[in-house]
Every structure is written in structure tokens, then in C-alpha cells.
Image (cartoon, rainbow, N blue to C red; front, side):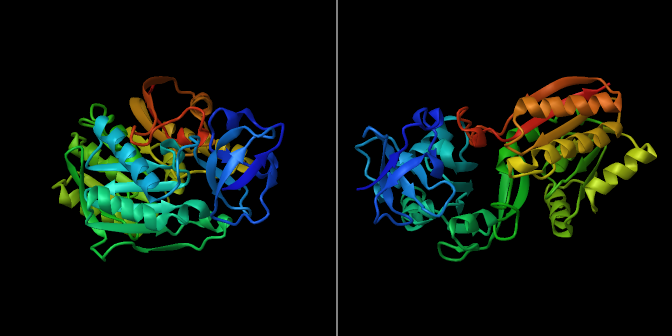
Length: 389
């Protein structure tokens, strides 16, 4: 097997189980090693660390797949990992719709697989895992006998690995608009044109958390995408729900999802939510419940201060729109903003808004997106409900 030898001084992160090995931690590599190869990783004094896939042009040249010397990385290895991941989801009650593979948290770095009923959507975000895509598809077919498999690799991060952006069928073609059920409600998922893999499964438990605070309430939902939080609010007894999103296509899908569930107490508008929140807070408009679920504000540490300012400003505007005693429902999917920092940002916004907050719920993504504390990127979603006094 090809070899990668680490420097004497490396981060404790590697020794403690983190699968990423950065270029500045590598001392020697075999001369004939090529992108996509599986390599054995050794410490400077020859001790076995693990084996993983290699991409010399990547900022992270090695990502470990196994720390067991006995493992052979082949089709059977991926089949076993997928079976293990599926067994975990079944044990915790996620079977119909779930994130089947959550990258590093399931021991398969940079691989995402979402399950929508009998359909699967795959993202292979690094060259090393992309090399094994045929074996991964074969494993899915054997384990699940799916109705369809679709590739959503139209993401810029692949270009950092020397990969092209692409999407398309990895099985026989099928209707890419799939109806799923979540918490007793129906939603259409567009796996071809929707964001990410077509649907945000990570909030499925959090959407249930609003059921008591929205009863009889006037609710505003910003950055609603296809209206999942808003439709849950309407279903749970809100008097009226207004959903905002800048995408006309997303707003149209929100309306269709509302109709699919027979709901008439919703309105959706295609509008820039950032501008609307700013203008309406100036105008003194108020709602019983304000829900915001903005996109990630940064992907790099270089822009972390801008992200902090952005989250503070948007939550400040939202708090001003909440009636005294009402509720703010707010989320952040920026993994570089960890939970303690996110709560600190919310408190700063409350101080500037001269409002007191009472925490109702503070939690992460649903557990089909498992968190490994030593892997910061797995602990990415913050979901908070506060009463605004």
C-alpha cells in the first residue's frame, strides 16, 4: 500500500480521531502516489495511524476512512459502513426520511446521502470519495433496492478538489419531484432543483418544537424556503402565517405545499427578507411569533466577524417585530459559529433591542445528523426558541 508519513509534531486532533490530515502535517509521501489512491498513514516513527484516500492538490491531502489495519477499502467496506449507518438510524427512529450518511460522523468523510422514502440523493464532495461512487451506488442498490438514486454534486466546494460540478441520475431516470411525509404533513421535495439535496432534513425535529407557541398566533416566517416551518405553524393552529423568501420558485412551492395539506391560513411572498425585516421593524409592525432560518453567513474563518455582525443584526431586527411576551424562533447553520457563540450573539442583540429573553428550547440538528464533539463541522446547527419580554 502507498504510504504517507506524518511529521514529528502534529495536531492532537489527528491522534484523537479526527479524520483530516492537513498538508503541513505531512513529512513524506510515496513518489508514485496519485489522487484518489488509498494510502497507509504512519507517524514519524512508523506507528500505524490509519488508512484513507489521498488528493495531493487538496488543502486536506488525506482523509482517513479507517484506523483498523485489518480493513480493506473496497466495495464491501462501503457496503458495511452503509449498513452500520442504516442500523443506527433505525435504532433512533429515522427510517422514512433521514440523512443516511453524514460524512465524517459516519466515518465516510465528505460523503452525504439523504434518503427520501425509497429515493436517495448523493453528494461526493472530495475527489477521494468521488472515486468510490460506483461502489457506493452498488452498495445502496444491494442494501435498499431503491426506486432511484440522484447525484447533487453541483456544489462549488468540489472545484477545490479538482472536480467538476455536476448533477444527474445514478439510476434509471425517475420523477425528481418526490412527496414525503414529515410530522404528519406532506411536502414535495425537488431533488433536481431544490437547495442542497432538495430538502432540509436536519430541522425535522425542530419543526415540532413550535407546536405550542404558535397556537392562535399571528406568525411571521422569514427565509421560509419551501415553507416547512410555516406550514407546521399553520397546522399547529396559528391564526395566520406569513412566509417570506427571495426565491419565487421557493414561494410557489410553499404555496403548493400548503395546498397539499389543505391549509388556508398561510400567505407566502417573494421578497428580500433582509430588507423586509429592516423596514417593518422601523414601521413598528408586530407579530406574536417571528421565525427566521437564514442561510449560512460564512464558510471561512476569515469572514467570521462579518457573520457575527450579520447574525446579530438580523436577530435584532426580528426581536423588534415580536410583541412583548411573544416568541422568536431563530436558527444558524454556520458551523464556525458554535453554540456558545451563537447564544452570545442573541444576547447582544437582545441588549441592543432592550428586550429580555427567556429560553424555551435550545437544540441542534436531528440525530440522524449525529454530532461527534471532536469534529466541529458535525456540530453545525443551532435552533433556539426564546420568549421576548
